[in-house]
Amino acid sequence: QVQLVESGGGLVQAGGSLRLSCAASGRIFRIDDMGWHRQAPGNQRESVALITRGGRTTYSDSVKNRFTISRDNAKNTVYLEMNSLKPEDTATYYCKAKVTTTDFRYLEVWGQGTLVNISS
Image (cartoon, rainbow, N blue to C red; front, side, top):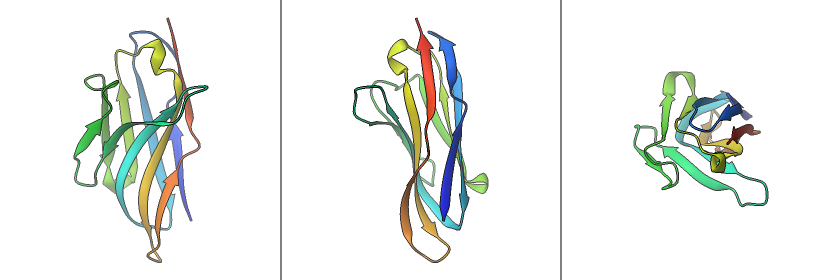
């Protein structure tokens, strides 16, 4: 029905930057909220950043002023610009979208995740 595919993860040194992308495809009528979550080994998945269709954003305290979420509604894509990266940012990052399909079903869809590894 609907798929989310993340890209942009990798290994960087502390203080560096990465940009994650997440593209949605399939039988999409409309995408409302989109967001990024992360899960480090042994930890629960946590919300990192959220953006509404209109562009209103919220961030977790741990990434505020370092990460920026944005989206391109025409491309059904959400981005996460990550700066001043710290070793504690190491995790698998997942995007999530609230989607109305072309047959008017409401879905919460997750991507498969992309690994971000920050070395000290």
